[in-house]
Length: 447
Image (cartoon, rainbow, N blue to C red; front, side, top):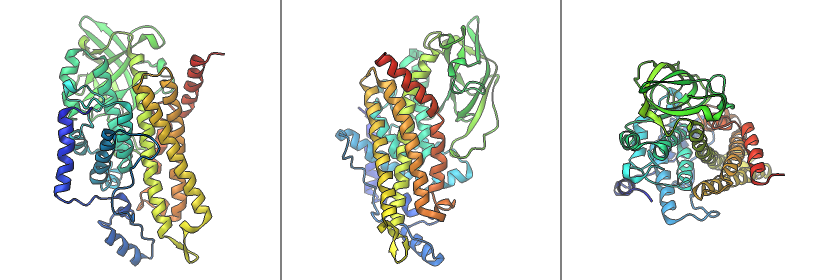
């Protein structure tokens, strides 16, 4: 259930939009991203001799879920997140990508709807949602802007870890501000020499009286240099996973520094840097959980993160399918719309099938986590592996349907393709997912 404050924000946001008679801004009407309306798009396209694509529905895309029973409340979450994506994300996502802008103000507006503390208990301002609820929300948000939705996932991973494993002091000082996103968070596990082999991390934390002293470097950290709170996995004991502990480190702590902002293929609407710890003194009460709990905390967070990144892939792929279908209906070749050609129809059918299969796998895995199923880790790894691969392939097929226009930066398909590519790498590469799948199969059904 949404916390009362979050529920009030949701209802207020929807009522305000209805009172103003706000026309939803659909990214499909902005295929030429300088056009402000469907009419302007059509006029500009006609003048340039280019295809006009305006998303004929002129309303929200069909979010009716015909293949997975959603509660009335989950349908409300879906609707509100979809409206937010179309109003607050989609119209600006191309500019954020081009200018490498991290939309912190937009994240705070998302937090007003409860999206800053989705899993957090309501006693500290959270929405108290389950994994399936959140997967539905992330899919809708990613339709409008993949990297912004993905950053929200990372922030919520950290908030969930603090809520689940944190002391009363930690929960009280951090979670209320994290739920409003007045404080934003980053997750620091990966290192330059230990990406897939996370248990081999080298960052150390030495106990010195009432402090721990952290030394080492984390790599590829989303939000690096901007986030206020860093959840850091560091070695307090011997080799292997049992020697790892988790710490909360605040921005501005002496010895904490950040590398240059990485120049990436995609996800340009959020910063990615190295995070350096040069004898960083952290009070002992900033240990999250107990010594030796760090790897357990990290892996629990990744199960949820894998669902979320799968959901973001589904949302991004759905946008590309919606766009490709409208383009195919409008684009004329040999005297007919290309949507009438069997080759186009087969491609669209395969794209839609891949998206729906991915959606169902993600939601099944989310439901398994919610029910604490013994096979939840297996389901999460399967869903992440399948959905991220399949949905990236959908973006490639959508680009092919748009032909040369799909390859242009003026059109959004190439951006979604760039953004979704990294989903096959982060939260555990898809090769590592296959290792996890085999390991979990052996646990559940040993031979």
